[in-house]
Figure 1: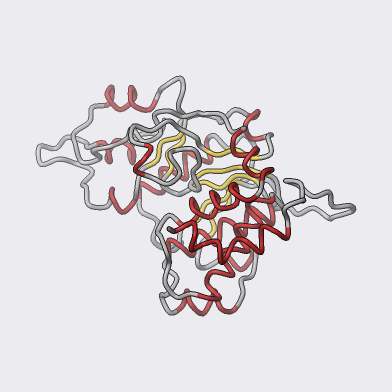
Figure 2 (figure 1 turned 45 degrees about the vertical axis):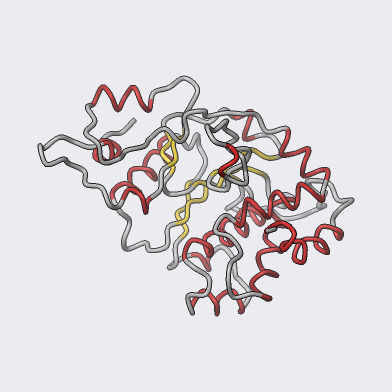
Length: 277
């Protein structure tokens, strides 16, 4: 039902690019110092919680020479501008912080390329460059109950990498702007997943690009029970896996937990905050 509804947004935009390659050749286009950066969004630069600080520190540790850029409410206009209707609806609260960040990531990645990473993504090792040199890379993991989420674990908008001008990302950006021109209520919280699937259903080159992404990071969702006590050895065993270097958790989910139990033991949340890995 959601995909049928989104056809009203998607179909014309997809028809316009149905014969376009994933990357159009642009002659004599001047590059930017921002191209290829690692982009991280956090709304308030003056209020970065310790668990987010740890995640950003880990991203910087394993950046492999790339520049990590923290984009915030205070500095985002340095990198791009947005249409008036987006700024207006964001200011009025019609577009939430979360879904404004969705527009931000698509805009940044379409304009500059590089890597987008959520601020609640814990990195514990370098990402193989072979993945990052491909047309598109995202975390594609086999999950226990794939039918419970529209993506079935085959894509993730909290981590993806591409070069600037990627067809999927630019088309998604346009879809988002058009959506908010027409509507004041979001059809689904995970709208990026739906928009990417809609693109793949209509654009064979996008479907092939997504199909080519390998399955990686099988334990990405394994940092659960952030409020339970966790010893140093248990934590190291959790985050030092040969097959996983990215671990995703929710800040909203983590904020209700303490760093220390009533008995004075560090919780899993406390270990994340206080341990460099």
